[in-house]
Structures are given as structure tokens and as C-alpha cells.
Amino acid sequence: GVVGGTSATMEAFAPHDSAPVPQGGTFSANPLTMAAGRAALAALTVGEIDRINELGNYLRQQAEEFASQVGVAITVQGAGSLFRFHAKQHRPLSYREAHHDVAESEALRRLHAGMLERGIYVAAPFWGGISTSMTKLHVDDFLDAFRACLRETPDLKRLDRRTAT
Image (tube, rainbow, N blue to C red; front, top):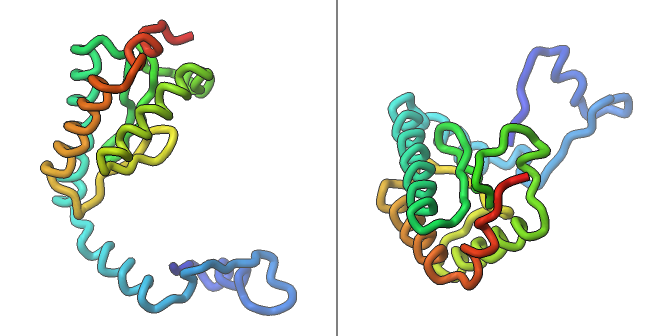
């Protein structure tokens, strides 16, 4: 990784005894990760951002639509290429509403485990993002696994068919 800024900003990170901001990390100043980061940023064009944002919109819409069709209370929030699933009938509008209770957490844990069993990694409790290396085929694979989980996970429908509090 890399940190950059004005001379005054960088002085805060200067490696002398009076440096007010300690900084370090596994990949700090690693030439390979810096080159990879630079290449990734060069590839991140406006067109690519538009493409991954469209894939994010597609994922959110398709997942919510299928959950509704099979009667599972799942809402999917996000923006652009990012998504977050909630085991709720209604989209949370505040931090408190977004907090999962015990039953919702358990439903998402089982859904997360089902996705892993199908070869799809999603960050817990159930969120992620579309990267530039992904295509619609990857998103469709995700959605196929999600649909299978909703069909096959025992008690998921019953647990999730509660009104959000």
C-alpha cells in the first residue's frame, strides 16, 4: 500500500522519534502490491465503474425478486457495485433497524454457510461487492447459489417471515 499527501501531511508519518502518527502494515511499501494497486487503478475506467455498478444493480434486484417469489423476507441494500443482505421484510432505514436480532443473524449464518457449500464466498453477515474481474456469469453463479440456498435451507422461510422490528 501507499500513503500520499502534502509535505505537511507526510511529515506526520516521518520515521523519527517525534512522529505523531505511526504507520505500518503487511503490504506497506511492498513493490509488488504497489504495482498491482497502480495497475488496478489504471484499469478502473469510468466504463468499468459503470459496468460493475450495473452488475451490482442486477444482483440486488434479482436476489430480492426471487426471495419475494419464494416468500423469504430478504431485502438487499447497496449502491453501485456493493450489496448487503438483510433477513427482514422491509428495508432498514436506520442503523437500529439494520441491526439483526438473534433469529435474523441465524438465518443469515445459515444462508452464508449454504453459499460457502456452493463455492461462493460472501463476507459475514452477508455483504460484498462486484470487482472489475467479475462478469455477469459470476453474478449469475452467485444468484444460482442464492436461489438454491433459499429453496434448500431448512426453516429459512419460517425464520425469515417475520416483520422487521
